[in-house]
Length: 282
Length: 275
Image 1 (cartoon, each protein chain N blue to C red):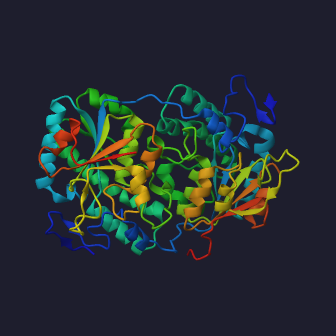
Image 2: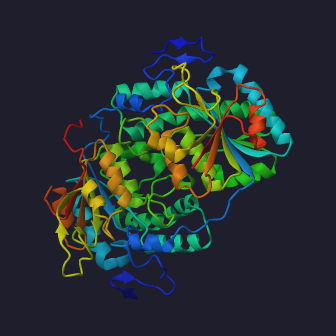
Image 3: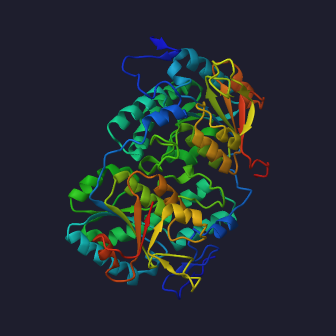
């Protein structure tokens, strides 16, 4: 694969993609593959809600921390966390100041770092360590030593955040998407969103007519165009295209034991899965 | 501790975004499409192609840099973003052969544009060329005010966080996307892609002799046309249709002397694509 090819004014390295523009749809289809390798397949990525859990303070956080501490040793876990009320405040002030979308995406992670540091402090006696972008490839170092890596959720697109698909010029990509993408490249076994509702409902669960959705494809959930959801809309699009992680679960972290049950594979909360799901990832 | 609806409450935290989750359609529609400030409106963002320019070596690179330096002396300010090219294609081919996921391919593809940016920095050093990494991005005004020419990798910092595409495992966001998004954030004066073709053709002109040049095109129409090969990454066209600032891009053939200069003067060379 190392031959050098010239003759058209450029020097190419011989490869399957030699001289290709990498834009052609035909070529992209040829690069598809139903099986991608998994980096650390026995990991559970657990997303702790910012607004739904962290903003509730001790009543919500301390029992969850206890439960996580008790699960250590039985499950490999990576924790991620969102920003909650302070992320919303950041966006609100940033929008009022006229900051561009990429600027909002750059600054919002700062308040997630608060929540990550709080969880790390509380879990430190049980092996909680901060897990940052530059140490992504050290994941096994932490896990093999029995630690619980804790990271922020916002993906590091920063100033490069793409223009939003949703109205309102806020970043489409938040902590739900960022943690999913980490789990996808890790090739994690499970992705669990710990929130303050039992899962996804057809409308505000406080309404009598609200129906619980126990299972849905991401595509169908997106097509419902629900006015509000406990997970980001962009997560559904991201999940549809993912190759190794083909389902996520949304559970109520205010109910003791729920996280343990989800890690044990019990069908609690809402299961959202990809229409690609066929179980053929390695 | 003061709480409202079970959540920590302090005076002043209430905003228009407090009530619902950020997935709520109501919130986003109420925010509307507000205008944002221009961060660096007088600065051009210019991409130097990897396969199209860097891999051609001195014959292509040196004359383009001469034109850019002349424009700099005339007071044009710009940031350069480097493409990847052939070595990036090689490592993608290797990664695909090993069934590596998209996030890993994006990580691998990030190394080669950095090499190319460093090459450009060395060539431009005596005239103020300076490497700028994503972490230095906020120092951009300092570099420009000091008379420097900041050189960056064109890749966006997505790496492991690159999403899988609907079709194919190659990262959708590569150096065209990174350069475009940087210009969009800056509210730049313009974004210019220096390549080795006169602009956009109806097909890959290197393979199809019947392909014809399209001097002006609409991003939305191009996406809808189903044209298989394009001169910029497809996501750039998608982003353009939703962008606030960078509603047009220009692509020029840097191998033709005078093209880069003409484009920076706002003349109609190459292909212009408008949202």
